[in-house]
Length: 104
Image 1 (tube, helix red, strand yellow):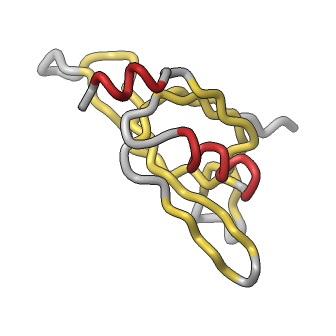
Image 2 (cartoon, rainbow, N blue to C red):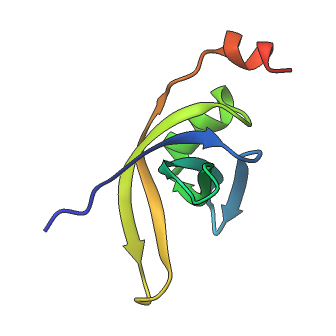
Image 3 (cartoon, rainbow, N blue to C red):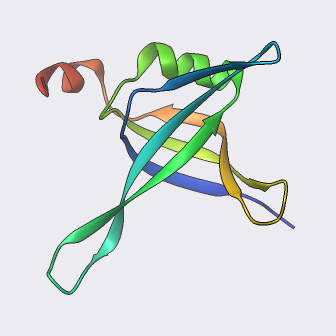
């Protein structure tokens, strides 16, 4: 069985650094546009939480900010069978710093 998730979207919020039991993890919310229009002719957006390990998360925390376009490759994880989370294994930066500066 394979457990792979690939998502492309914009960072919705400021990246959150979580320190717990001598471990550092990061979390962000990712805006992902659907590939079809609703009945009103508008593309809806889903906002999904992404969990990042210390190494991957520290790079995203350092180089990305709100509205950065990123690609996420990861997996779905569930510890209790009901709550499913997305765990990023690799993040690709798809927008440049110049694009982010021009958005201000």
